[in-house]
Amino acid sequence: MHKSVGKRMTAAQFNDWVEQYDKAELRILKPDVGGIEWEVCFSSHLSRATRTADSIFKGEIILSEQLREIGIHAVGATTKIKLPLSLWLILARLAWYVSHRSQEEGKAQTISRARSFIESIERDYGESNVLIVSHGAFIKVLAKELRLRGYKGKTGIIPKNGRLYTFMKRQTKNDRSE
Image (tube, rainbow, N blue to C red; front, side):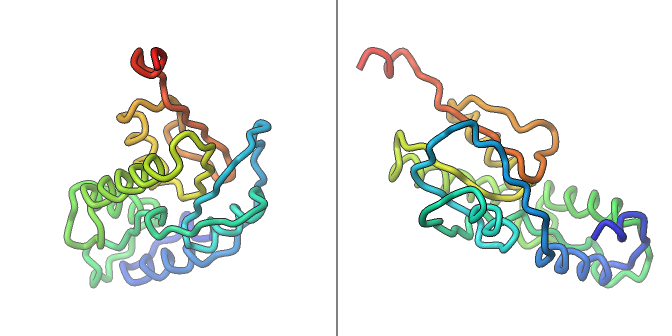
């Protein structure tokens, strides 16, 4: 896939590149889990995530479409203008951010998906150590929503493949007095 980085491509070629990327084999980087005993594991249903989850979690892995990557498509899908891959990626993410019609899912829908997933985890798994295997752009949204709910943790500007990011619920005064 890296051969395409400097390549110029049409909208159709970009959409094809995205599709191929989503199916691509990846080198499994087994993250240091810091001795944490994971009680349950959720993974995106996309093969890149399930292969990673299989490499680090021994037990049943619950696949969730809610953890899929934020899809991207070329803005102006019929244009024959050739642009660098990096520019197509920027345009597609900007289009997602403003919920442009070229994208299947806009920012508001992605946030709603992340919130729904977090609510189900909090409801069904409460205090359990939950391992979540997902994708970079969605991890950013999920992390922001976790912080808004009182979790502490960092992902950096761009989450890295194979890196473990931990989030812990902050204790409130009410939590400590119970």
